[in-house]
Length: 155
Image (cartoon, rainbow, N blue to C red; front, side):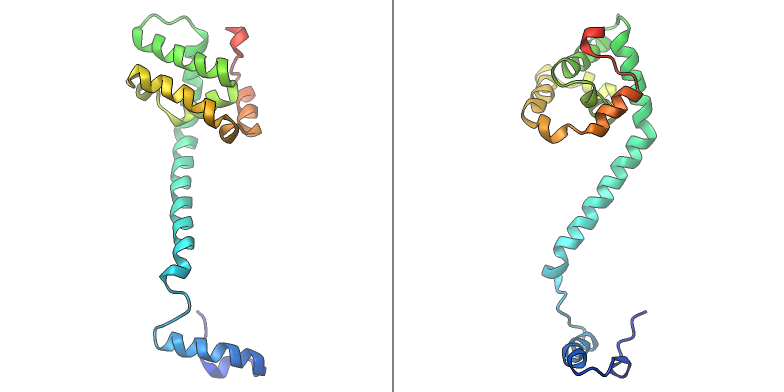
């Protein structure tokens, strides 16, 4: 707990001169830290909490989603849904490489991609075109090697 008693302040004149008005404002329930001053920090906290929730989901489900996607990429598919998903994954792999396969499969469940309208699946692939530099990270490439995601030439 912060001691806000004026007696507890160091007796340095500059410190006392600076802190006494702040202590008076705190005792009166006022401070320099009005909502405008902390708004950016509040937004950052909420953003970080959201990121942590996403990471928790990816840590829990991500490896399963990625392993399933690798199996679907490699094996011949016979059902319409799995063929759609395989074609989507191969487009991502062909145009953008194995690192983004990690990102897409860990972020989107297979059923979500399958049930998207064709124009929306194409839109996701096109989205990479405009945002590839922002989505590409060396860590994704390392994970792609770890999960043994094949190159498009190996399929």
